Image 1 (spheres, rainbow, N blue to C red):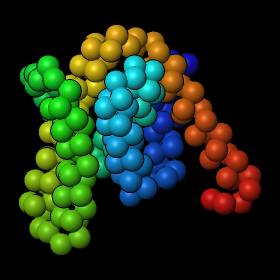
Image 2: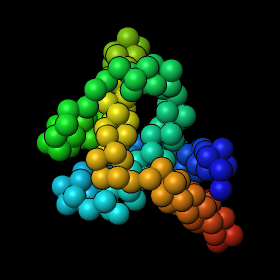
Image 3: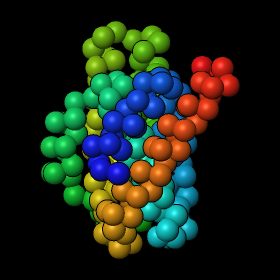
Image 4: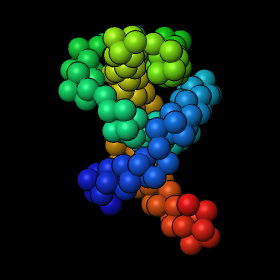
Length: 168
């Protein structure tokens, strides 16, 4: 499956489940990646990187976030060469998502925009560390693409089964 096909299926899943569920799922996937990094298991890290990349794309689409800014930040941000800062940066989007949720409930537009920008920065840092992990643990991008392909197809099939069962 091509990257474009993976992305198309992924964004359909994002729209099916919606922002709130997918932000919850994103935080779960970040926690699983942190656990995999702590274990230093390259196969587990590859699987969780694929999951996190799927969720990053969904959150960027559903909010929407400024992808150009995130990509620019990825280019200029230089990850520390140590696991401990990596784990901190992997957890940072969780804090930013919670900040955005609080701002959505009780804040002004400028505070919501600031919370959204905080999430954009956190995702930029996160993506930089995903690249760093790929290099550090010698994970191929093809391996990650295969995992993502499998996962988005599995989600598509689950959505189809839910529809057939009358759950959607």
